[in-house]
Amino acid sequence: MMKKITTIILILCISILSLTGCGKSSTSSDSLERVKKAGVMVIGIDNTYPPMEFKNKSTGNNEGFDIDIANAVGKKLGVKVKFVPNAWDGIFLALKAKKFDLIQSSVSITDDRKKTLIFTDPYIYGGNAIFVKADNTTLKSDKDFPGKVIGCQAGTTAEEVLGKLSGLKDVKKYEAMTDAFLDLENGRTAAVVTDPMVGDYYNITEPGKFKKLKSSLTKEPIGVAFRKGDTTLRDAYNKALKDLKADGTLSKLSKKWFGIDIYAE
Image (cartoon, rainbow, N blue to C red; front, top):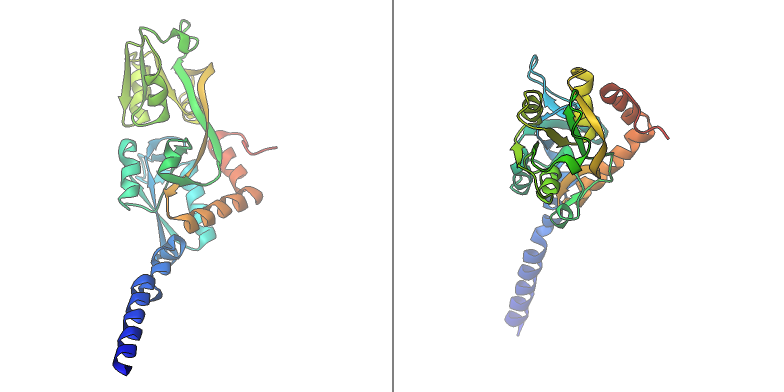
């Protein structure tokens, strides 16, 4: 009888240990604890999207509004920040493959993306604005798109929106927005559709080349994207963003990169 009781107790202990993983499973699934233990937060970016995130040609460093925010969040969380550039059309697959911990790279929050990702609250609003050459007087809205070649970045919501429009001669997709605006400048496309702050940055740095049309295709909330299970890291990141807004850091960075405080009440 004693042998049987001992065997039963042993089986129960093994079962409990297998279910709890000796108490380690909760630690391994805690995304915030994982990052803090590593001492570094790895962030996926598409560094071809000025002024949000781009590679400075002179220094080789990653710069931009998102870069500055991510570095500020890293300080709040007490960890270093490492940026990993990735082509936009594969950036969500790279996150799923754990190439990085999160994506802060002008990610529009959409219902489709929320099926596989979790997000912070929006920290800026973008969308699909229309940019043309400064001397273009014939293209005034998307109603003038039929028969035209329109440029956008591959894998973005702009590609999705343009794909639903009829009559376009072609939708030219680019890996880098820098190439899209270069083609627009050289007349290879009639217009480029992208986030308004991206096109506005070109108008600041290269005045007189482009203009933004009054009409736009969509307005979209932008947030930081995480894998579905990484709620503790997302929550801590979201709190840090709120703190950075409250202490005026986001306003300061807005003025630095956009020339205005987009957070002013």
